[in-house]
Image 1 (cartoon, rainbow, N blue to C red):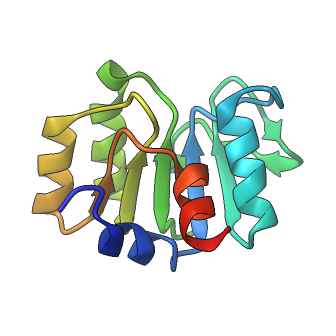
Image 2 (cartoon, one colour):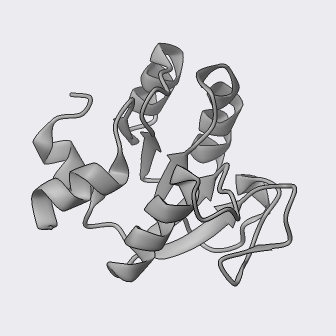
Length: 134
């Protein structure tokens, strides 16, 4: 059930996205994907411990520091770093986890499925949104 159209469309009905690994640099995919999603009605919450603010929004050190409910956790970190992020996403009761292009975690997929969290991996949020809604 990973990366099928029905799951992807369901993810796009959710509106609050925590972006783990978001960069303040406009040329970085984490930045321009988040900007695009923001321009298309999604609430973006940056997660990057190295910055207090990104795109004019408060940046958090981890998912566990965010006080509001998170629908989607969008991950821009290398595959070897994602499992603790997925554990945090489970802890905060995120509804969906999206691992961007090149990011894969079979163990993370199993953990998400066990916790009834929608899971997409090795895919681009912006590309899929444009494919379905652009």
